[in-house]
Image 1 (cartoon, rainbow, N blue to C red):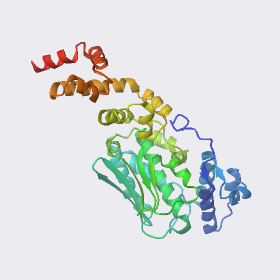
Image 2 (image 1 turned 60 degrees about the horizontal axis):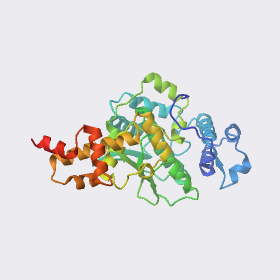
Image 3 (image 1 turned 30 degrees about the vertical axis):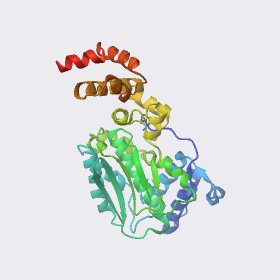
Image 4 (image 1 turned 60 degrees about the vertical axis):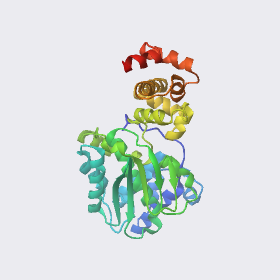
Length: 342
């Protein structure tokens, strides 16, 4: 895990409500949580403070200790325990899949072998993939932590399996916004909705076709310290270049700046530039290529004037468009159109 592109997280952002949900599991099984809390450096006074926050590292420590001490990776959520290694089994059942879509469907199918208290489902509508949780019994005080963590388990594994960040279009939860609702956009970047009919999230269906990039050896290494996948956001997005191209092609005039593109992609401007660089691209090159392809298409297939094409391609005037087009093709727009027609 030391070479994973997961962003290091030292900010105390995880709400104490999630720790109290873990303490509830200890109470359910009649076990003292003191050891786990001590390992995570969480004091009784902190535990009582509703506004208290802990770091991702503390959450990893207290969760891992509880799962092993209670021998329940579900931390009391379900009508029976999920013994230590249960989610590792789900990962192993999915890792040999040819692509992410098959892997997630296997995850959903094999999860039913662990518990029928909740059901997991993947569906596709148009170009959007939907991952949903159906509750088959009342989860009580464990409900929020169960639904949040179950979604993060799958999302974290999916990102790791294809070695790519999978941006979420939206995430929804079937309960009112909690007092710590501000943490949800950190766990689920994108639009977050409460009081929905069921828990779930949606993302670009193109990710389902991406091949898995991990083998058994990588899986064994990941399982030695898998919990950060459920807490931290994956950094690299292998479809980012394609997504930026599509936005520039269809909404180039509206999203003409790096700031506007970054807002649309739910990432910072700095992250946009860094991730494009990681993928061997730059925003200016993508803009140039998209403008060139659009201009060539309009010159050869349409009847718009050069001035209209210049505007459609995002240029302020015909002169700057002609200069750029000649740099791309070695010809003026009019000459290029004339030769293509001949």
